[in-house]
Length: 73
Image (tube, rainbow, N blue to C red; front, side, top):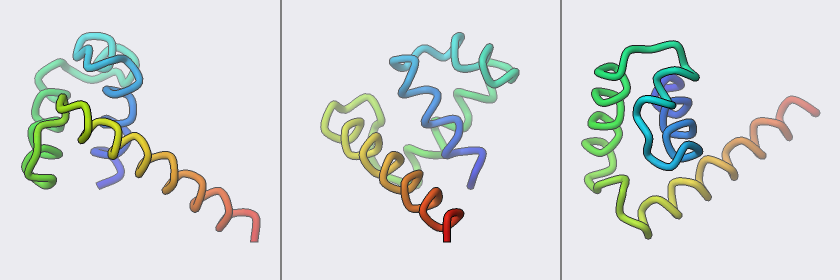
């Protein structure tokens, strides 16, 4: 699950560019495509939908903030 989150965060950061995401994560393009399809399957929505993309970005940021807060305690 962590791999999917990391891939999704990177994919969104690079504006849906599979090649850049694959390069940054040192993975094959097909691996990125597979992971994005897995995320879409779990969510039941396409990631390129603007509203879905915004919701995912917010959720990833909020979960990152919670993880940092847990580390500080």
